[in-house]
Amino acid sequence: MHYIKKLAGQTALYGLSSVVPRLLNYLLVPFHTRVFNQAEYGIITEMYAYMALLLILLTYGMETGFFRFSSKEQNSNKTYSTAFYSLLTTSTFFIVLMYFLSGPISSALGYSSNPEYIFYLAAIIGLDAFSAIPFAKLRLMNRALTFSAIKIVGVVINVFLNIFFIVICPSNPTLSNLFISSSGSLIQYVFISNLISSAAVIIILLFTSGILPTTFSFSRLKELLIYSFPLLVSGLGGTTNESFDRIFLKHLISTDKDPLYELGIYGANVKLAVLMVLFIQMYRYAVEPFFFANEGQKDSKKMYSNLLKYFVVFTLLIFMSVGLFTDVFQYLVGKEFREGLGVVPILLLANLFYGIFFNISIWYKLANKTWYGVFYTFSGAILTLILYFTLIPVIGYYGAALARLACYIFMTVLCVVGGQKHYPIPYDFKRMSLYLLAAVGLFLLGYFFSFPSKLLLYSFRVLLIFTFLLFVFFIEKISFKQILQFIKHEN
Image (cartoon, rainbow, N blue to C red; front, side, top):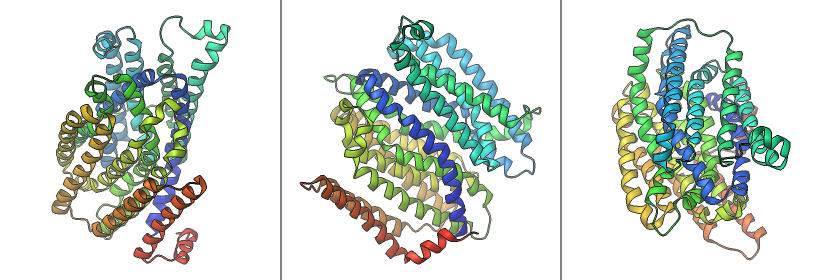
């Protein structure tokens, strides 16, 4: 099982680039939910929901395509240079285009007096999309520490500038006159801070990677686009499931409620499910190159199977830990935003199934059948939209959360069926289902069972988490001695 330990180490290193920046960025959640009201935070939530969609569009599957073709050549410079200049061209074009369209778009979204929101967001998206390939090259080269350090520096700059523009400058007349516009909302400085940090990251990336690439291959670009286009289409469908809840909520919420108020509540509580997303992100950074590098090896399918099983166990531990202690995590958001805490366990489960889908979806990437990804994600997107229109007008943001959960379960089932037909991997679904049922059952017991004392309640919930862990050890026939040997093993 040495490959699991190696991946765990890589995941931990990439965790520096995901966990530390996200935790630093997470400082903005208690900060923003205390300096902005629900409606103002709703604006920020909506803008960044569009960002997720546009990032998929502007990277158009190039990251995965880069890994695919670079793993087949001794020198990846040809693929890297082609992808680099392709993204540079499209990102620049997008930023220029959005500069001229920011007025009409801001009016269409209901922010006609603030077209700068649109341009700042477009510039952030363009810079972040362009940075995808330099970051992917660092991953391919296993330069996880460099990757992490650059990510962390970017987030530190963003957090500092948020505090500087929103708190320090307004309280200091001299700084306020220099940096703060007399017209407009402080919301714009959330985007300005992000824009400056994204630009700084690009500069650091280019400095770190040395001279600019000097080659470009139209034939390689054609190969990249043919391979990556289905990933772009499926990514757009997947973004419907991931981000459109915050876009549609504003338009489908019951008319007797303030849409931006409800969106602000939901957006803040989505952030509380971030620990699951953090782990999936850092795991994805580590495992995606691993999947391609080990393709065709004798035991590769068995390795893929084991990875999914232990991934499910770990994410179920996250689900129980965060879900059972939402009354502790609630202090990460302002008091006015805590009425939506009930959606957090639902979102945690949804993110868990998204992680399972990511693991299983590797089959169509390895088999060069990427159009299956389009089918799965758009099938999920159609179900999501149906549930949005059905549930959100009735139960508000709970409908958005349930739609996301249903979508990822549906996509996972479809992907399992297709994978076992075209690229069978011996996943132990029976055992994983047993772990899922056990974790959800123990969670419900701890979530709805009450004690007069907080100490007793928390002790009981910790006991439930350890009960699940011991159950896994028992089923897997893992002893504590084996765990210690695994940790100490050097190879």
